[in-house]
Length: 306
Ligand SMILES: [Mg+2]
Image 1 (tube, helix red, strand yellow):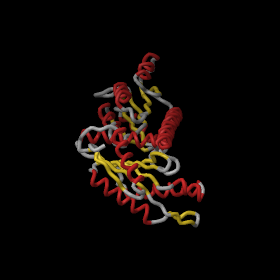
Image 2: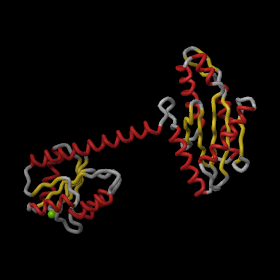
Image 3: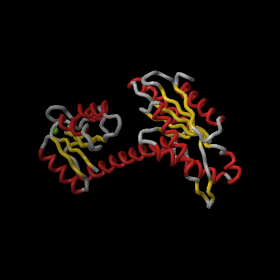
Image 4: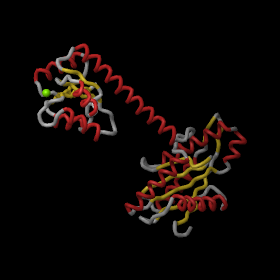
């Protein structure tokens, strides 16, 4: 773990540094508050700081306040080091945002255990952040295919539409629905049906660019959002997708399952505002026509026609 020592007294600074290095910490030092603030706001900044209260330039307590006011995306653990030992000073230090304090002169063992306590807090904090991230992924992903789930893909589309209006760029959307999927489930069972959905998702991802949004819109229905694509680009993508699904049967459990997909495509006109419901409705209509006109085909509608 990386620790910043901000201490203007060279003797204390050296002593702290050699102790911390001995205990296995990576150490950065500085001798005034301004530099401390610079280091704490730099890239890969240390998350643990031993902060001397009285320093030239910006005092430790001021650094403390600035950290709490400005650094929100990560937690910085602050151990205040001070020659001020009165209760009112300690209260002021803690009120400014310090997590802990130690008065000079201090006992090495006491410092050691206080560092350990701070470290535990930071590690718990890291765990919380990663489990929050795991929860976020669970909440936005479809468990079977790993694609965005219904809520998340509709959300993503909404954000793209706002962006597209602002930047005056088009956005294409593709609504794709596997043909006769119910038959697959009825004939081969749900496990095979699941494998077919996963394989379809894989092919969707294969054809997409890294910044396209792909979601499982419903049972065997998928929604793809293609930023920057006009209607022609979108229809081309849809045609490639249709071919990619038809060309190779899905192999699962020794069975070869031929598969086709019907696709409705549409695109927003450059920079013209449209809402999620309207554009989905437009793509849905095109999909409906693809089904009615014999399936395994692409139909499209410009946004104006709908
Ligand atoms: Mg000092």
